[in-house]
Amino acid sequence: MNGDSGEKTQKSGQHQFQAEVTELLNLMVHSVYSETDVFLRELISNASDACDKVRYEAIANPSLLAGDDKLAIRLRPDATAKTLTIADNGIGMDRQELIDNLGTLARSGTKAFLKGLKDAKDGLGLIGQFGVGFYAAFMVADRIVVTSRRAGAAEAWTWTSQGGAGFEVAPAGKAEAARIGRGTEIVLHLKEEAARYLQPYEVERIVHTYSEHILFPIELIDEKGEARQVNAASALWQRPKTELKPEDYTQAYRSIAMAFDEPALTLHYKVEGRQAYAVLLFVPTQPPFDLADPGRKGRVKLYVRRVYITDDADLLPAYLRFVRGVVDSEDLPLNLSREMLQNNPQVRQIRNGLIGRIVSELESTANKDAEAYGKIWSAFGPILKEGLYEDHERRTQLLALARFATTAGETPRTLKDYVADLKLNQTEIYYLVGDSLDRLKANPKLEAARARGVEVLLLADPIDAFWTTLPQEFDGKPLKSLSQGDVDFGLIPRLDTEKKTEDKVKASDDASILEAVKGALGEKVADVKPSTRLTESASCLVAGAQGRDRELERLLARQNRGSAARPILELNMTHALVRFVGAAQKDGRFEDVQDLASLLLDQAHILDGEMPSDPAAFSKRLNNLVLRGMRPE
Ligand SMILES: Nc1ncnc2c1ncn2[C@@H]1O[C@H](COP(=O)(O)OP(=O)(O)O)[C@@H](O)[C@H]1O
Ligand SMILES: [Mg+2]
Image (tube, rainbow, N blue to C red):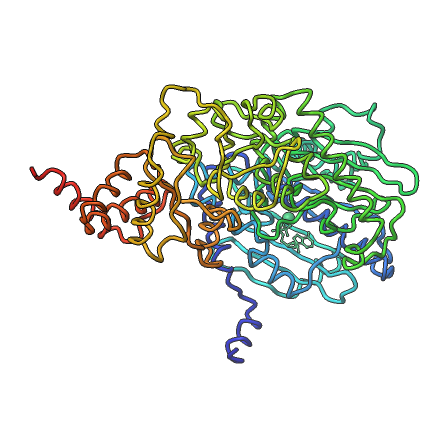
């Protein structure tokens, strides 16, 4: 870096916001979003995190708490100065931390959020669902002054900004430095239209709504300087269930998960014995924003004897990452490092216990209240299905929990439903993977199944291409793809017994047609075979029995992972177009054979939702054939 300009920046203390921050601030300042209350939730949550952090660091270094070990969050509205101050005696920030944390968008989720905000029409509604952290304060303040002293540091620093493009960081003034022994003070100079946050009762109301269950006391300071605690500040999960009302749980959920919705499921229990711990877990109603994060991290918070340790302890597998809440252990050591957590047998045991409880809670909800469960499944089914791939031990349980779209109607079906309705001689559970339900419903590979009234699972979630690569079975019936390997419906009777054209064709003709098409297509396909899955359409593409399903091939190819294997072209030997190949072959019209064969292949690609490999050649061939057909002989 150019030393000169760095020097200047340092001296003047001026800094630019990262571009994304400016963008976010713009959105916020010009927002017509009315639920600005969330700013307080965000700042209190940060203050609480800061208190958690200093308490955690003090385990190794107790002097950090010296002289001031009662951690608290203080809120002071000042009607005269038109300011609202949020102060904590938590970990604090040094100069560099002020620059980094309050100048960039640190959270990966925030970027995704910003994108969602811009893409969605009602994007502003998302602010509330997601919360935008510290920057939410600019919804209500046109000037913000943050003064902070990092625990153990000699000097304090002041960060000032009026939004816009930048902020300033300078050593704190004498009075401020003296006032702040440790931690952070945030002074919001409220906008005219946000003057209601100067009312103590308004501030108190918001605390009750969002921050009731923050573990540290939140004190409201009145004009006389007297403090009054306004939140419960109790570890709700330690209290007996009998004392708690549904509203208490909703409040706890919102404050723990930083959410706005109602919990769809609540699990609250204590485990005694070899390991003692309390559990308070929630399944949200709305999918949380970070579900799509590539890290696939869970967010369950680990406490040890009421001390917050981390939300990064892998207490749940990725396929349950939508579950939010708290686990509070009585036995784990406090000074557990993150690395030690990963391999800790006690943590593993807790994890196993949690998974078991969550899965059985889902099961009992599915049994008791199909509608409620249906909602959970539509919100989190695609995530839960990751378990079919990753959790071998619980695969059968998870399969039973799954709800599927099928060819049998509009209501989602269980595999139990499916098996109960098996056709005569049917021994397999059939499915078809694709990228859209509508396209799947129109897929010709369903024809033979349909002609026999055989139900087919229609799998249109991206994850479906993956878990189906593992051999799966339910109730002794293997799951079988209709676009892979051979399918034998032979023993399952057709619904319309008269229309038996399928068997009428001559085998010797068939062989020469297959040969001709294969010769014409050469390397483009791995093989050409007579189809047992088609009744109406002329052709389709399938994967070999050993190969990967075609949908997975396509997904991987889209991500440039691995080249697609050559597919097998299946022909409906009763179809007129296919019989034409035989006729053309006999008459020595080899150009027609070539065109027909290519057309059969291109059609099959199109029916799978793909482009023909050479669209121009495709339409030329089609035109040729049509013209030749129309020309009077
Ligand atoms: N009161 C505070 N005390 C210490 N650090 C803070 C405080 N407020 C904010 N920070 C720092 O600023 C960062 C950004 O805060 P925020 O925008 O709310 O995102 P998040 O809390 O999700 O990290 C925090 O991660 C933290 O490091
Ligand atoms: Mg925050």
